[in-house]
Length: 358
Image (cartoon, rainbow, N blue to C red):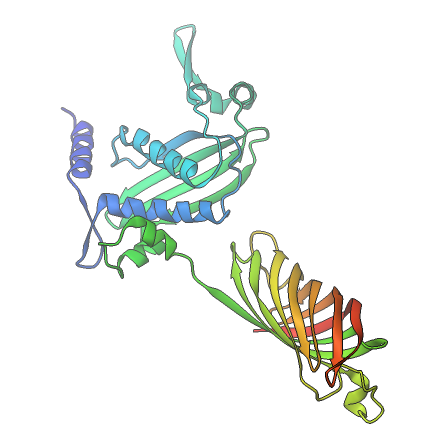
């Protein structure tokens, strides 16, 4: 037996005989628990749409570090396939021809080739199998931890679409694992990975509002509280506003008796809002971001209670500033002055707003 063979046997024995992965601290962690942490981070990215290039994917290569037996390659492939099928609607295609090797005899030399070393042949095989993307994997195990590296590649042009490495020592799931009661099930653990993100908005509006008997130019002060989800691409929340006839702020003596927005009379508008942010996969504060908000709610004023629907298109400048255009409609509702109906209020509202985000 050669020295090289002895080293290989000892590596395999060490790997198979190590149910515990020893960290630098005194704590010991089971190998498969650490592997589960790394795979949970990958699953988290799948759930949140952070992994791209998953259309009709095939796992092409799985490279293992030297201290891992080759038989573990099939186990890694099955685990990755399980997570992809569990959390996405992606078709995982088995393509043995994509990673097969062929041998040819050239004189007294045997030449071994594979499809991935010949782009034309690989593309032909991928098209026959219906593969749009390949997933290349590298798995490394050391005494300090586990690293799983994944790369998604376009089968048509061989361009890299997405790539990321998951390290057990920086794993979010690992940090969570060290601070929880493990009698809880895995589903509860995945649910608590979501972190609530709240944003407060203070906005100043100038809105043209339907009034009795004519349209009124109003200044508005609004406070909005939004919860962000879907990797900050969507928001949901409420806004509370106070509207005041701009002319009555300067002089309210000449205000019409039927004016619903006389300053400082009581009137409040409450809206339920949903926002779609157009910022790509990552929000960059150095770029202008935009978003569309749809809201529905109502306004209460002295002698008036009516509904309103509103659409807002917003541009976010920097991290804390925003500018918006607003367009809404108030359905017909009666207005009462001292208990007597004095008319109805309905019509469009429109204007713009500036504000801050905190």
